[in-house]
Image 1 (cartoon, rainbow, N blue to C red):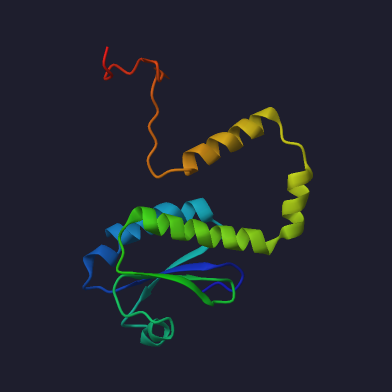
Image 2 (cartoon, one colour):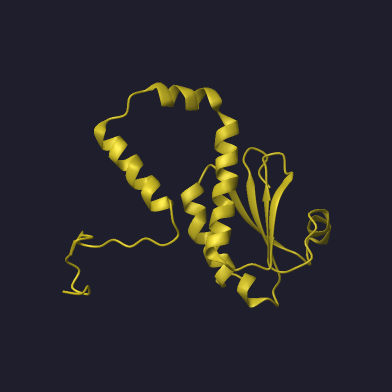
Length: 152
């Protein structure tokens, strides 16, 4: 893969529909890919056609998703999974490992710069949204719901 950034590799097979192009696992990774442009490389490897790579990374189940650092060392592997939440968390872990170790001086310079009120609000909203897999937004307040489905 790309030697400059970490990689997420999907090992797939033509006989396994969930890992084929357009299948659930492929769709999960295609949804995540644009969110990490320039930070992570997303690729597909046909396991049987690239047997040596699959063997080197210990791939024995289809689908398998391998998470590699920029030096192509295996950091994490998910075997036989099509759980979007598990895959998303693993991708986020890989991205956070790379961002925290890649440019510490740039990160510290950004931390010392005062944030505008709008940036602070956006950061709080981002953290809130990413804090859970499921989020409920409700009109009103806990004491006076106004969603139309609550008890009156």
